[in-house]
Image (cartoon, rainbow, N blue to C red):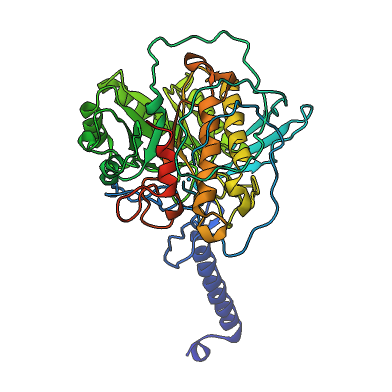
Length: 498
């Protein structure tokens, strides 16, 4: 239309003007969408979250034990091997003990899982005095490295005292196996004598089992002086002259059942004996890491003492006092002292004495709970399970270790000892009885520079055979048969106790 009313020159000027005005409009619209150098789009904002971080902590483990005590808790369990394992370090040190008359008898094993991780390098105890066993552990969960050196035991003669031992009747004579010899290293400090410590000959001889079997054993003629079970129990079923040893079960979560049931047991047994846990180093038993056990023990110890200051509180027995398990106990002691600022208060030390293989995913007792970085400890063979020399050396070495750790003036109880593997693996009743005889004779007589001063420097004060009756898989050590009569093993043990 403009072409009809305006000359061509004006039309050209008008067109250029319209073009400039249109470009300016788009320019200013574009500028209004730029603020302080940031481009603002017309697209709606979408919240974009940062990706979640991968957790740095290992997942928590499911506790092996339930949160309530079983009616009849089972003792240590050792998987029976299908194939004979290989490679066994042998004990090389010895101990001289006076000969004792001969009666004849046996006990339980285990396997381990991991909780808190500890990286460990472990080697068997050396036999040369000039060598030392280096054990290095890294507490992965706590970012701490612990280095410890276990000094080997000196080799020499170990003093002993002779006492008359009743001779069991109608029992096979043990083979004349040489006893190990070794002189533990005495401490340089004067040891105090506890005037309140007293123990009868009969009280030294203990048995383990279910409380329901305890009266049957007495009726059959087994005059034991001490009794232990794997829980707290009603002591009214025991004879008045029997000393009861109660047990408090634990797990990584704490005291099973809580403190209240424990308080009931303490009040019902003034001046009683209480063991805190059963093989915390073993996965199928109380399965508790060393640092966690130290904390649980602390709570249980002071709770018991707040109710009854005269109660005797004992540390749990590890499955065997090997170098690897002494290292586990060292971690317990160190964590306790670092956490609470005091030496761990222990009225009685306890251990189990079994010769069992320490290898992950093998027969025996595996690797202690919470220890990683090593798959092997003492690689005992099946035949070593009945080697009394090794068993006695384990006790001797442990007493030396107690002295080194400042616990020489603490009494020691072996709350389980015996034979666990079945008869067809080479452990018929006569072998079990001979093994029992050798160990009991040693326990009665062995004394020396690291023994308990208040008991004539004896190495061990109490010992408990496993067991009166095991109704599952450890029948070779039973002291009662199905008719309630003493087995050959039971008669051997009874022969010691008038």
